[in-house]
Length: 370
Image 1 (cartoon, helix red, strand yellow):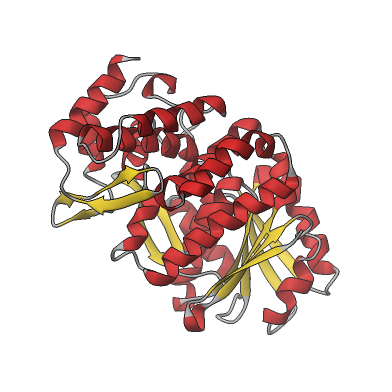
Image 2: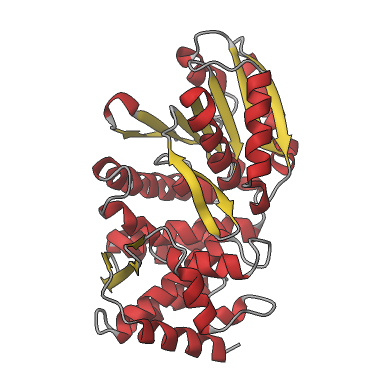
């Protein structure tokens, strides 16, 4: 059931290997890359309790020694303080440029470790071993690495491609239903932005996939990675087309900042709500039919996911304050905020020609339902 997606970036090309049982095979898959049989692993405590020993056993089976650093879980770990901790620890481990660092965990660990490797000795190789659905289909592929700032999410970072991605779909069995569905927000996004057939397939198969069907999970991860790899290959540093991958994210990042990057709103939940809002704005601008945002929201509800602002617990700032938070988005160019809008399901595009009044109206309407 193993699948491989190649990311053809010339000298920085790498494979994304997808399937069950990859932790046990990690040593065999990683050893050809190593100048010496040792690696450093950075993970977080919850993931370590579930998967660290399996990874270390898989490495040891190929004669690879490993040392591990465990960090606290959660979005707040993507910080200056933890970036310093990881960098200092890797230097203490005498990690050299040709050595390999393994990022074992979800998007937080992948982003943080990737950034540390980008700046350590001006570039150290690293392997992504994503253990969440969100990380397997999105953050582990494409080389975006970052930490958060008080002004917004992912504002301090670098492009630094991994040397290999091992997406062991068995790890998805250890996710809570909420965490799995959070990751599904990113899976659904791919269908919405560029593959209507994939979205229709998800409408039919996603409930069984969430229920544990491994074949469906591998297929969904593979298709998501294929789409991201194709876009990254054409636009590695997000000069144009890659911004499509941010469908729903402009709203999402504002909502994450408003909720303190905590458990009130997980990233994929914000993406899902943001996709619904993006389609609603698109509909009011006459870009897509009125049925499209309804179809998006109906699918989210069918999956039991957060769908509306009213599903976010606690207080939220007003529409104007949320729009102000969007102004910190990385897609701001010359002071103008670019949005990912849609002409229909599977047909997204990037534009700066979006009326702020329409966005405010959509946000006000959504807030009024709380």
